[in-house]
Image (cartoon, rainbow, N blue to C red; front, side, top):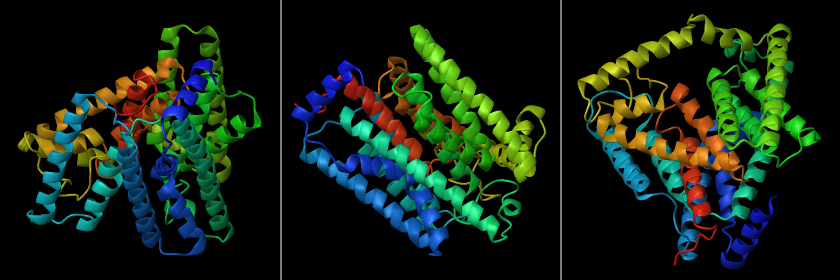
Length: 426
């Protein structure tokens, strides 16, 4: 750890009472669903019961973090533009949500309670809690615990798949050649693997972790195994874009040693991914290579064709009502357009579309600043960029709690560093 970071930790410890629930809160935002799904699969407990319990725990911890921040007189991060954009967007989305749940005659895919609990319980309230200006120690503890939790989750998911195959269950056939289970879908598995790999690669790339250590190699391999086994194209593309962004902003600083290290790491990850993907397809019957090849061939599988149809209908709906949108779902298919920006425009029109663009622009700027600094907080920027790209390829507003929390934490972290790492109200 750099001397400045050590001094910042000491300063924060001297003047700021730690909020011990923050690392738990941050970790469970990312891992509550997959860990609960794996536990439900292994124990035979109803996954819906476990899912509700885990969401309730995340909400409880978010409230605990917010309460502790108030009691300790912690400031919240973010510029005035960020707060105004956030308030306008969530007001517009809430109005659309309650209109569709209470007044609309169109049937929705999910129960009304699910839209409300996900929107406010996993997005709005946790996002507000993540706006807390945290200390370097709290953020680093969150990173360490998140890495460990993702290792457990990825290992557990792979164990579940192996046990299912050993019992003769046709898991691969049910998922179309993609690792996944009745409780954990391939996209969630791929997201876990991509985040784990990016956490380790980001640390190695900025010189905070040895490249050839057993931990670095094994954790990256585990993340790539989960990612490639899931054959989820969104997380794959998101990981590549996030690492390219990290390489680009680091190159701008002209730190020769760091650039060479990053190039070596990315090259090793690319080679390992190519050979692993080929092995998964040839030996295990997964569709990793075939699905990735579709991205470059211009051809469409059934899933892609359906998404294109939904996107066209969503765009048409926005054009019919550009100011306030027309619904939280595309009514004819009862589906969402798999793009969080288009989903926001479909739901709220320009009233919410412009604010969400402002939010993402501010978040992207903060993420690039953190990555460019080469500090211990660079991982937050990498994770946010990765989740932003992923939700642009397969996401919606009310189920993207990890993105909203990563956005808030990234913006708040930049504010904390700009304030001299002393997040206490005057």
